[in-house]
Image (tube, rainbow, N blue to C red; front, side, top):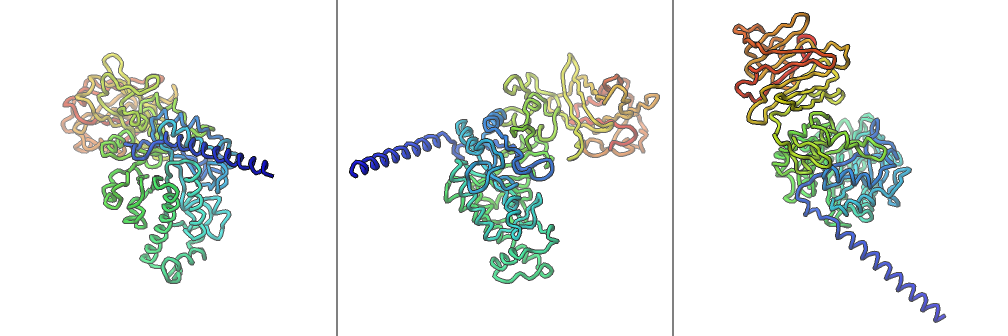
Length: 546
């Protein structure tokens, strides 16, 4: 009996030593992790698992995500903050054996492994929770959800906040994340229920307001506003307590696409949140809300395909203002990444949408200018900075984008425009001391059989030239009004004096050529004279650019 007790004692001592060793190992690993305060400039990105082909990604869509490939991707862009996922909008977790079921078929313990790899590289790793939308939870709790569309659908009842608190506590306690982003901290969309309130939310209204729910028809705007602010505030306090009780240094990063919404302005959430993201990407919005946030709150702005911000322009502005940078895009590969080989080697004008945003952010994250170009494994600044920058007309969210490449051959600059349309517009903004002496524009054709645009126009803000190639080439040049907004259609009669200049300007050097590949035109010397700031050109078949 004594021998058995001694054996048990030794087993206990060995077990305690083992536990102590594991604790020390964890602490040693944690010391390699960066602290939020040491990240001077926020350089963040998110390979976004939220979205599939239509709406939220089905559970398990990105189950093959590879943590090592993700780490390599973020490292290649120069990011110092990885924003990935604790629980994505479909309601399943990105780590194993937690209080929230993992993504069906998840191959590896994705979040924990990415945290470990990120910390080894000195990167912060943040997770994500979508607060008012969770497909799985909504389906399992139909009486507490307004359906499960790809929009906010969950009221902040006691039952939901208990779930949210346990999910956040578990993620912060067990995965090693440095913090997490909270998204869609909004009131639910009740359209799926024909605008009628759930009984559970009517009960919540009485709980928060101290009076019975008056009914949908009698509910005033002031009552709705007061209730909404109380509900969101209670939800925020639940989120903050769950995170900070486990790790007081945990970063809570709020993203909002409407920073001045009455439900959240002048709120405790704004004052207490650690990081704040303007998802619409309009950095001027910060001026209106800066007095509402805490002195410790770090401001960040967003670049994504949906918000239409020109990263090449806004990134330098944000850096100058000390505002952190962030972008996100849906992955395009099975392992959950985006192919950088199609992005980094390209000029920014050669790519569009999220690829262009990634290219611009990668340059900024690596401390390079928007004009730098890829060489082997890094961006390098050009020996001679470009004399101008090109912007192309936006085609909207559904349109195919025009792209352009600018090259230098001997004594001339060549702008090669690839366009899926017979109509379009581009704006050249001078960035150097003067324009190149020769600028050749090549509008690539869809095929050798495509005739190409029949009408070409150029202007510099004072004079313009119109070239019509329908039969015999016709050239009209003179003083001009308007025409320098890349996204605004020129007037039908752009020249002064009803479209027929009283004092026409003679342009002997207008040269056009049509080949099997492209329609080519050289910018007339008179448009370059005087070193104007802008030169705009457009192409179309007929009088107007659509």
